[in-house]
Length: 211
Ligand code: 5GP
Image (cartoon, rainbow, N blue to C red; front, side):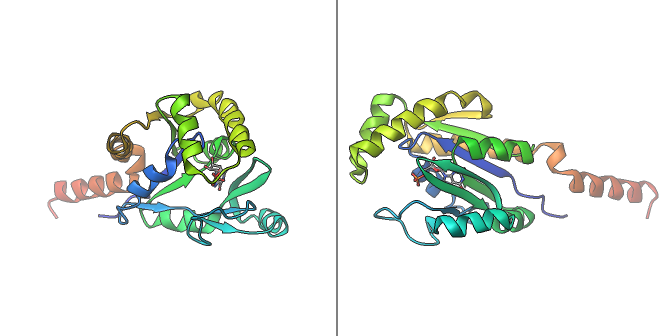
């Protein structure tokens, strides 16, 4: 019987919530998960790699891609553009992979409008004191950038109720298995298995006719 379409998964959360680590754990299961690589105009940070963490482009190139309809969504965050290239997401979903978008809230809300079946997770650290500690321990951001990110966190906190699930990233293993459990449960919804149900019914019909 045929493989159902993958689930579109949105993961948002404050900068410093540990989203990247959670996502890295999920994509270790390459058969089940694919990570969408975003396009951005922000400068690469230490540890970033072209085509791995982001596609780094100029504002001009980004705006051209918007014009050409090449992005599923995009947003401005701390003075830079970030967006999700459309083609990869579409092809991976069709291949039955669960596609992860690690994006901020404006983008998450646009995805929710376009894909009613998307599953949206908001990840937080256990406390704001822990968030500040994690941001400083990265050692890659200036105090000004840290302040901007905390201001942004206060903005994003206003939108938590728009998400389907709130995941507290205290223990990584628990956090990852909570997400996997939600995805596994979502997969069982009849609306995501229409083709399978049609095939079952067709087989039952055949069986009843004694063929
Ligand atoms: P960072 O600069 O720390 O890598 O990312 C800043 C924020 O941009 C994070 O909240 C991240 O989730 C978000 N982001 C990354 N890629 C995208 C994208 O394609 N679209 C949107 N809307 N946000 C993104």
